Length: 165
Image 1 (cartoon, rainbow, N blue to C red):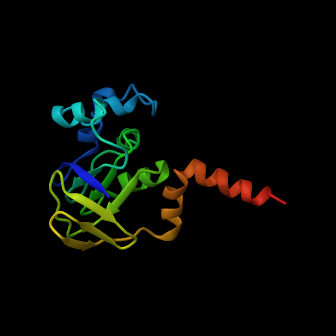
Image 2: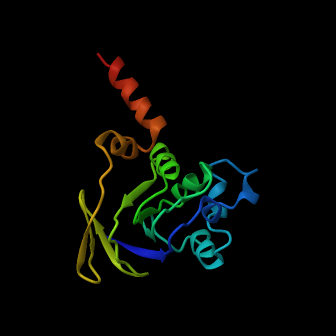
Image 3: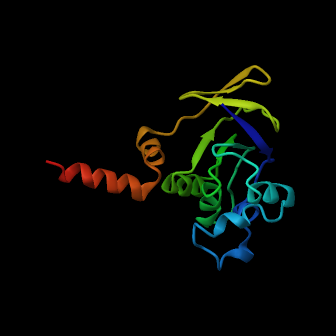
């Protein structure tokens, strides 16, 4: 079980997640410091390492809208966050899958900062308000990519399985 560290509204764009003025910095090891740079309290919390791995960032509808910049997903992956939102913008979701970022689409999600959350294959359980919410599961093939840690790791694993005697 993990906790919600921050709650965001609808239409959080990739420019909010990873501002365009930092696009010269693209290395996954360097991008996390700029996550939510224009939301100072969230940026500080992340950069001061105040959140344990797999902490939850709760979002509304259309999370990751806007540009197709991959850095928006990689910066969140760099902080080892789990993103639960009502739904995700298509390109952001695919970038997240390719990078192995844990994303959960939960259309009826009710969560506040500090709530304890448990995620199963088909539900999000908010232990704090004692409610459960259905998730929209990813197809098995897309979930396998996330579980492998991203598309590169998934492909590497599949290739190695082919060459084993």
